[in-house]
Amino acid sequence: MRILQEMSPDETIVSQGRYEYQQDGAPTGQLETWQISQRSDGAEIVRADVDARSIGRASLLTHFVRLPDGRPEVLRMRFGTDTERAAAEYQFEPDMVQVARQSTGYPRRYDKLDMASNYQVDYHAVIAHDYPWRGYPEHAQGQSWAIPIFSPDLWAEGEDQLIGRSLRFTIGPGEPTDWETPAGFFAGARHFKITMDDGTEAAGWYDMAGIPIEWVYPTKGLSFKLIGYKQYQATAPD
Image (cartoon, rainbow, N blue to C red; front, side):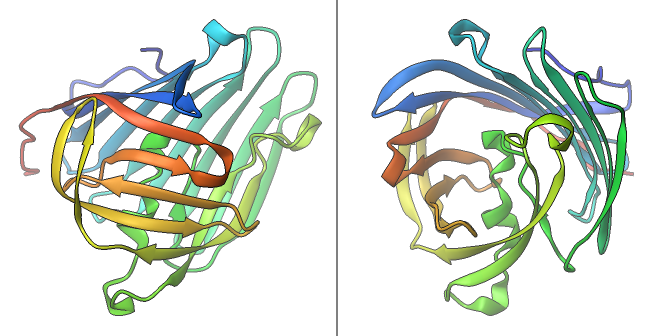
């Protein structure tokens, strides 16, 4: 697994796993390996390597830090190939995101983006698709609910690559259901349907820790399955 920042002595591994990317039920050759660790203060660090080198496509490396209260703190990411690459860092505040980014052949850019309160972060790795599980409010009581989302734009071109976007996704909860993937059997998995602001529909299933165990785009034939998963005993923060 490639990473952007080494683990510190203050970190303890909580869980790790791997997703297989599929098109119409067949592996694409693209794999995502991830790891979640915890600092002694209770903050979580989520590292992911979306590796597409075997199929000649751009890869994505991410390093995401979540504060003990669940709010995002910082996201670092690198996207591209050996010759064309973009990198960015996002500093999260309660109602704003500060962005520093640069892509090959362009100067470094600095942006600020205003956000609605209680926003979630979608940074494209499957392990980042926990925002329905984290962001759906209890007071919605089973009704579909729109939540604010911050998401970097991987597909913008030129100097706009990795620019931040303020979006709004509609989340609809389903009934808990037993679910099975190559990583194992998950009893009572939580289920959500997601409608993105461009109308794209998705669905996700989650274990009790909020780890996505499967994510699908039904109209596109795309699915992302958890094929490996290991949990460790976390230590309580001091």
